[in-house]
Image 1 (cartoon, rainbow, N blue to C red):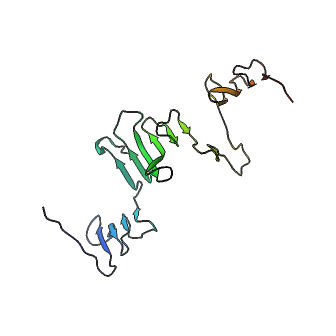
Image 2: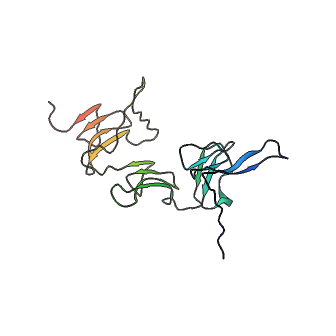
Image 3: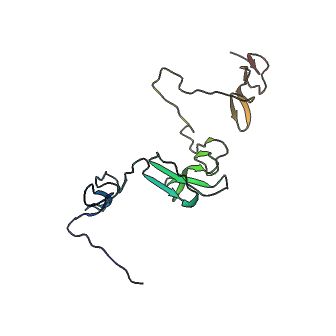
Length: 193
């Protein structure tokens, strides 16, 4: 099979336009700028190499469009036609810590992982440096910086070290320090200073 080439010389642009009828109301469907940037649905290019502009939804990336979502409204919809919960729908990689190392993932089961390729909770954050915290929260707010709302029977909060509970707040509101099942409002194992 032969190769066909379209040459755009002297930084010229290429514009494919369309309209609902006739020559009136033509709008850009595909635009290639003189710098090589591409616009889909627009001829107004941003600072990025690819600019998508859609009326309602801009882009769908899918492994199988026959089962992709049909509702719009998103700037970007990502769809993986899989029934395997741990399959990645979206992953982000960088060369920090290894060539193309995965840094972030959204799985088909809805779990989101930062610093892990297999998140085991809705949000799973794993730190891997000795000098930085795994997670940091900072806000300028008149509300709480972090709100935890337990609707089930499990503990509200647990802090552990190597799997050993060090601090716990139970669903009943009891606080345990060094105690995994506190029976009082404050239950401490060890001395208090």
